[in-house]
Amino acid sequence: MVATFVRSAPAPLSPPPPKAVSSIVPFVRNLFGSPASVALTALVIVLIVWLVPDLLRYFIFDAVWHGDAAACRTADGACWVFIREKLPYFIYGSYPLDQRWRVNLVFAIGAILAVWLLSPRAPARRLGMWLGFAAYPIVAFMFLYGAPMLGLRQVSSDLGGGMLVTLVVATFGIVVSLPLGILLALGRRSRLPAVRIASTAFIEFMRGVPMIAVLFMADTMLPLFLPEGVEPNRLVRPLVGVALFASAYMAEVIRGGLQALPKEQSEAGEALGLRFWSIQRLVVLPQVLRLTLPAIANTFIGLFKDTTLVATVGIFDFLRTVDSARLDPNWSGPTITTTAYTFAALVYFICCFGMSRYAQSLERRFGDDHRATV
Image (cartoon, rainbow, N blue to C red; front, side):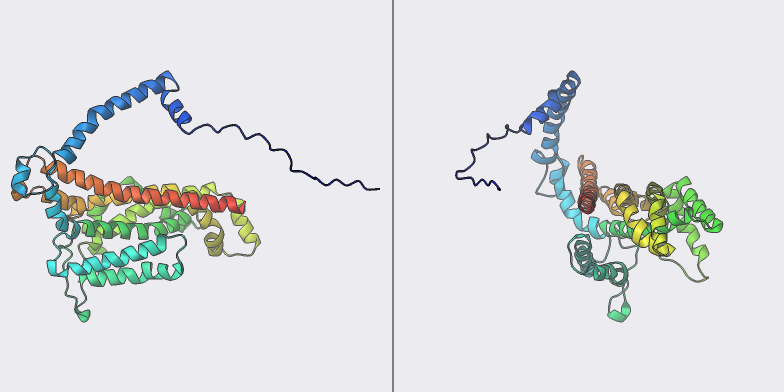
């Protein structure tokens, strides 16, 4: 005989769970949890009270937001009018006024491709990669440098400057350094002595000399490796130097990821009958890039800031244009220099902070995907 039981009334309600601790409690505990924390909190408060009012007064309340150069000469605060007047020069350099639409068009296409490629859920990303890495450089070169066959007159690279040059140098260095760094890292771990020695020699040489020396060598020695009569563009020389220098550092970042990956991963690929490049493309590199993503982002951020060194070979990057603009005698004033360098620092901070935040979002997404597959 089987006994059954059917509940004829609702079960009694359970008591509510204990109240969760408010997020303010750990916050206060971190600030005042120990004598050392109390001392550091007090020190930070003193610094804020000491610095913030003066900074607000200088950059906002006493700043010159309207007027002309004469207003800035007698002002006690920042001269943002100077930034407004010089902003086109900071963006385009001395690029001809009637041809700046070409720069704007290249910026717009690049922004669309960047959003397309950097969006995790964007459709047809393979097509976007072909457009971004194959077609876009050609189109950008034709529009920026000129293509007489299309009715675009040539513009000397000496006239370009400002953020235009900074973005060109940084983008070229980032796009070239990652794949070249991967090849150098694989070459340094190669079983072929010639490949291993050549890769190691290149990496150690680039790491052993300052970037300024590499830029000077690229500026003076690059024509020696080209056929007679071929003169590389003045902007191309530092582009090559920056890309080679960044590739050496990127190679060491990738090599660290390769060493952290268990060799059983490659052996599993070999057991499946995959060839060397298939193992690297399908098994090893996806995991290595995930492991080294913070270091890769850090290298890209450093490369973006190092683009300022191209000024040593006569290239007017963004910081160089800001530095030259502050020397304009028409805008001489006691706060012009401070305003100019503050603006430059803000621009670099916004760009680098954006790159850092995007890298962190990728880390979180890859972490979620990894946990979802475990």
